[in-house]
Image (cartoon, rainbow, N blue to C red; front, side, top):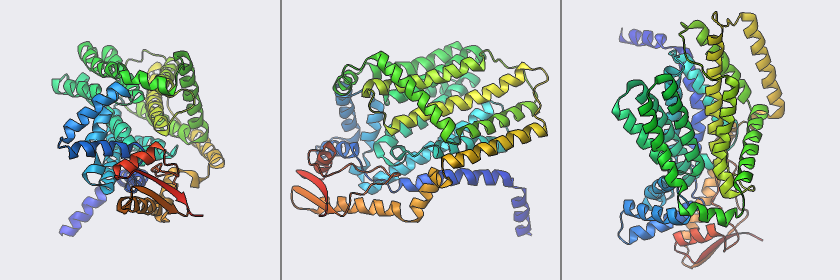
Length: 492
């Protein structure tokens, strides 16, 4: 009898929802598993070395991290909160490489959970979509965009980037969520949380700070126009802006700018930021499934507005102007990177932040466009079956065209699964684990490691150790392991 009742309960479970959850898991789980193959890289060594020296002197992790960020603020940049977190966690000091992998996996898990909850919250509170099927479909589209439009080993496996970028963007999503809740509920706890998160997230890398301030400005503008909550809007936005101004005022930003990009002007940086933004949007539109995802999302929102009871909502901005706002936001997010590095460098982690801005902007614009169209016509727009069939056929043809541009094997999820199943990821991890063990166990101060090849992997960010003993990464790794210098050479 009990088995029969259990079976009946199982039959009541919405199988479409279960399938949607499985699809989301298929995209996310390979990244989480891959993050457990991370190896320490570049700045990881230097930060671990400095923190270990401080701990050996009897200082606490909190005090050591504070001392480091004060020094960094004066000498190299204003991203003090991001640096505080990466120094405070110090997994290499606390537990070694395995601890680093645990932290990277946990942060990645936190990000994807935060993203899905943020999409769910936005669909319910901003788009008035209450169907779990539709909400999960929106999650699939957003997750698919972030996981399969490009390969980015830095944000998946490099400890410093995962903590200083991915973790802060996840926190930013929670800040926006609390900001919207504060406007809706007018509870002080949400105002405090939104303000604190906004302030601290603005202590990240300047492009993360720019994205944070742009999003807080967007929600604050909605607070003025839609919710008429001016006080809350000003408090929350000004908190994020204050954190950003403290970041920008860092003497280290100007020292670093002069050292890296020299006389690269603001005008040149703006021009480069706009060019990079436009180039990236073109790439996403014509060489990835992004347009198809937006079409599906547009149909989803249009059908929702058609089937729901249409309530009079404020659509004060023409969607065409809103496109300009989205593009301007991308330029603003790119600008600090272009000014800081000059025209020759735009790291993958910065591309990822740029992508986050594009995705947030375009998906929001698509939802707004669907609502604006339905609101503009009193009778709304009814998508007939023949119209839907034409859209579906066009989408399939577009997808077939994508197959010519990029093989199915070229999509990151498939490639990552192959890496995990054919042993390439494990081989890369074991290779570098062996290198680090040999460095640590060698009694001599000068360490030369001989290997048949210096292994790299497109999905796992490599340590950066090479054959040059004066390479700063080699020096940082040598100091961490207590050696004079190290290098790795190919066998003759």
